[in-house]
Length: 238
Image (cartoon, rainbow, N blue to C red):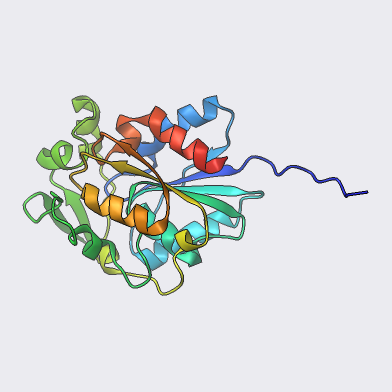
């Protein structure tokens, strides 16, 4: 007689934020997923360098039992594309208006390979810190560049409470085989994105063979469209 099998438990969903925001960018998405009974975790990323962010996420994932679906927004896509960031428990990936770099590619180079990004010296600001530099969007440009379809009051709050990234992280790459080459992936392409050009998102998702959903949204997709973002994540987690 064939041996009986025990169905795998639903995956834990881990949400990885990108540059300029922290895990609060996922709050609406978390609420949507929790309403559907899913276990969700959203770690705070240091944003001091790609290699250190990769190590930070790997140690976080090491603490999770059972299958995992990893989701990234923006720069977070660079982190989860690095094979050193993930554990064998990861079953699928979702990229939400996120980079999907291949080995040797950097977020900075990818962002300007296609025209259209409004992340420029005129809209950004770098502040020196004791351990490096911090890249911010100038508050007066935050809504235009990052969150054009977000409620203005909410956009202003996020503009004031940015989580900066050391710009050196945007020039780092990895050497292993990109995770999206071996794991099933989903990609949400924002068609009104002024941070990562829409054509960049499309081309990276096509190259990765991701299941693509396009949405008329700014770069701040998790903030502006939490229900649609949650739907994509649930498809990946299925």
